[in-house]
Image (cartoon, rainbow over all chains, first blue to last red; front, side, top):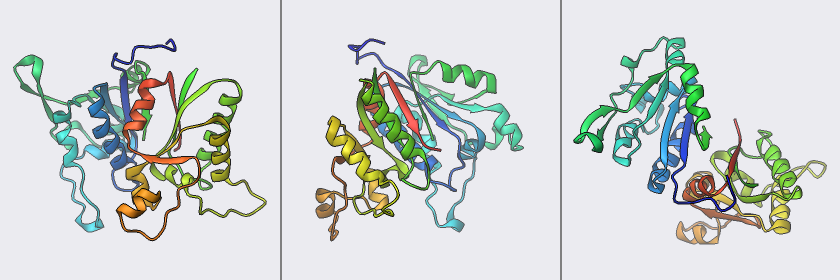
Length: 141
Length: 130
C-alpha cells in the first residue's frame, strides 16, 4: 500500500470474538466498535471462535448475574449492514454445541429482492484462517 | 510506514501497555509515522495522571505523556470505555457533574470512530492486549 492510498476504497475489517459474553467486557465492547464502525461503510465481517461462540447462544438470560443481556443486539446487526458472521465449526464441536444452539440471525439481501438470509456462516478452522488472511484490518477481542 | 496502535489493557496488570509503549517508541525512532495510539477496554487506565507507582518502577502514564510531547503523538482514549472506568477530562467532568478530572497530559478523550479511522488511514493496525 502506498502513502497516498485512496481513502474511498472500502477496507476489509474483521472483528474476531474469542471470549464468552459476560465473564469479561470484551464481547460487549467489541459489539460497540462494530456498531460505530458500521457508519464508516467498510467491508465488515465478524468471526466467532473459541469461547466467543457462546456470544451467539440462543436464549441467554442474565437476570441471575445482574448484567444486561446484550445478545439481542446481534440480531439487529443486519440493520447496520453487518451480514457476515463466521462461526468456527471446531469451536462449536469442542464445546458440545451445534449451529442449532445459536440464535437465528438474518439479514435482508438488497441484491435479492430483500430476501431474508442467514447471517451466520459455519466455517472450518482452515477456512477461518483463509478469511483472516484476506483482511486489511483485524480487531481481536 | 504509517502505523496505528491499539492498547486494550491497563498498565501493570498486563504487559500489553509496556509492549505497546516500547513498540511505539521504537517505530518512531526508526522514522515510522504513528497515526494514532488508541486506548480501549481497560487500556483507558493508561490515561489517568493519578497513578502513583513505586519510585523504583516505571511510570507508564508519564512515559506515554513524554513520548506524546516529544513526537506530537496522538493518544486517544475511548470515551465510552473511559466513562465506565472513571477517566474524565475537564469537559466530561462538567458534563457529568463530577468533582474532578484525571486525564493525563498528551491524552485526549474521543469516540470509537477514531479507532475505525485509524484502521482505515494506516497501513497497519497493531493490537496489544489479551
